[in-house]
Image (cartoon, rainbow, N blue to C red; front, side):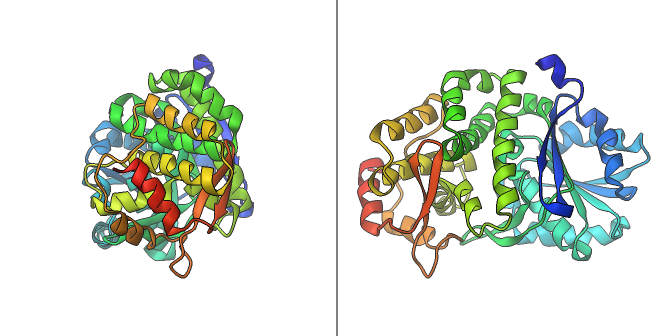
Length: 370
């Protein structure tokens, strides 16, 4: 299969009418970027938004690959890390773009992980009332989750993703080779989103991960490609049915209500997004036993896979429950101050529920977080 990946990329289609687009998955795709850009019929001038870690690794190579096909780009970067997903950085970039001579046929390329993808997508959605953008994810988290589906935006000090929009890319270019430079901790954090996707929608995929997770974490191309493709297929299917999260798409937030609150409480320092989501999933699996009928055995399977993958299943910080509840109530899914959770009925089947009480949360908190 690895040799197949070096040829024509695998293709997953996100069906959204005239805004449909492809996710291309393979090896060595960055060097062939112009081959995939040309059919999009974008303008011949764009900007590559990246960060201080990814830019030196892949920025010039992507720029040169596009230039070979007559497409000129400028590279601008932001400091690596969650703190760059802010209105301050968005404002800095937006004020810089006019100097690059971009027009409405120009485009933005998001080259990096989830922070860069969300920030660059937000820039594309707002500059000149919206110009085209392409996602070029370089982390596992971005490959399987954040680059797909069109959620773009930035954080506020009070919480994650409180400012943003739905704005679909024209293409997602998923080059698995980019994972070679990914630090081990970042890889494992991204794997949390792989586990999440299987847990909410595909029990057979979850069982495959239980057997093959070590191969994915060793970055074996065929195993990584299978995991990325299946996650993209699942997310594409969900997004195609519910682009703006009016119903089904909310299940993609499994573990995120708790995880986002934890990130906010540590001010996005020392805790990676995937690590927070891992803790959130294990926490909510225990709520699911009480409120959605998930079996104790399946809750334990989920937490065991997270731990076996080198992810935290229980909070590594001593969070105050009242502050955690306060942060969770800022979650976008809350309604009139009432929390809504994505719960598991069983592995592979998720539901959105507002039946969880503060007492339920306190009971799990007292078990998990003491």
